[in-house]
Length: 310
Image (cartoon, rainbow, N blue to C red; front, side, top):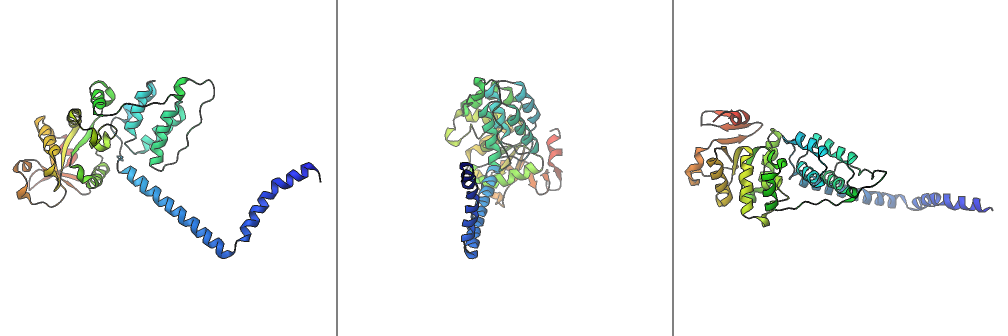
């Protein structure tokens, strides 16, 4: 037998051996093995679904008003830190337009650090994504630079005053709440998103910089600026609201600068125990549409009330 023939037999026999091994198993054993594989697959799928749902809890399913500005700015600037800031801001939103923008980044940008930031976004949402290959040709040191931005209230405060990417941000609603109502807040703001409202929530919109353990005097200035950037101030009132010092302070500040204010009562509460000053503000009602109860006899669509001059 020639050496070539021997090599050919060895090369092809592995496929035959694999087939023989399969046939060695009995029908019952094969069925058991198939069931085990199916169970593992279903468990993995369930885990992915839970992970995606958890990720979506902290991502607004709507386009921000500044998306187009950020998109143009990304391809105009060569500052990698500014580009990272744009990616991280838009990764807080889930929409077809944001997906297309991030796919474009993967296809056109050479820096691997920025591409991996985009990859993390798609993976968190369990969406299809393939990291594009490194470009051929001469490499630049920028291609392999690892981009990181400083975090914290002080850094965000600086950006709010000097960075036009922060200054251009606008929100329909600033949502004041007690953080202990987190699960309820997620359900509530998702409904607002479905009604076309971009909502500001500190632990969603500023999640990289406003961690609870970092709270300090700079946090106060940041909250003030975010209230100014929002069209309407909504207080999410629950049984826990009266225990929050932040809610009362935010309400007072919003009132002081002349913001439109309304209150959403999340549950049936004995109104007699609520301080009287809360009753001067109109109530927000949320069903299929968002309405504002101006008085006991009349209601108005939220957007009409928001755009109406005081």
